[in-house]
Image (cartoon, rainbow, N blue to C red; front, side, top):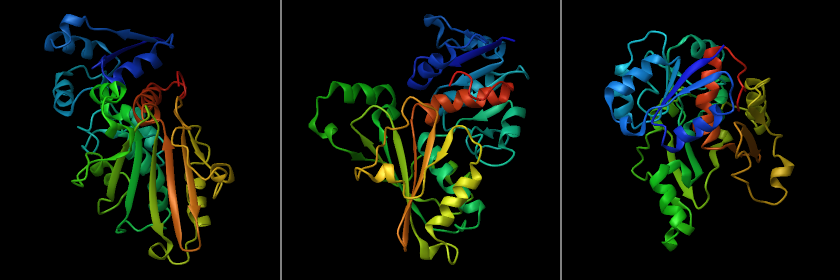
Length: 313
């Protein structure tokens, strides 16, 4: 069977990468809009409604407008923006989130693709909350370091021009403590309070790692690093795109430095627990353009269509 797929916003970083994934597929017919009609609402609406699946790779306001154009009940929308990630009626496009999430994605015609930082944070934290080790009332923090491609075309151009010395060093941002991923980070982990979250952009194209530091004394009484590792391993048992690495992974520690880019060019997430007797670091690593964006969107499409979840990935 062949499925008609349209990418609204096909010239952006996420849209271009989705096209790369789809170009490998014999079961996908990609509907393309003429360059001179990319901003023509009537033509966009026609293609959206002609598709089995449409990806919205647009700013939030434009994604809401595009969603309102769809009148065909058979069209499934997968929105890569922030607009619908905590909106009722939209399934969260993270199949590994919890039991039943794949069924939700399969049945829904409205799927919100997770943010890159949020995906890593949620995959690291949700199993700990579900296992009762981390209280939903816990006050925690997280740091994320990411490649500059996460900033889209303008940031990519800025870094690749390499005209300013300040771009050679890591740059913390979102210091107003209101990052746009925070609502989904709370909604899909069960946390009652937003984490203190500091993202950092580095002078490399792609790759992302979120670190969640925890004092064991603030977790369920008697919790050790082994219990956190066991909770992650149990939650993701059998998941083809998630690897729970060995506790205090010797290979990762061998050179003393963590490789943020080791999941690049894959749809994989690596999860780690490093710990002492009193503290732990829970870490999640992914490709911010893969499982953090375009790869996750295609994975959700596969789940929704009922084809092999790894097809094209």
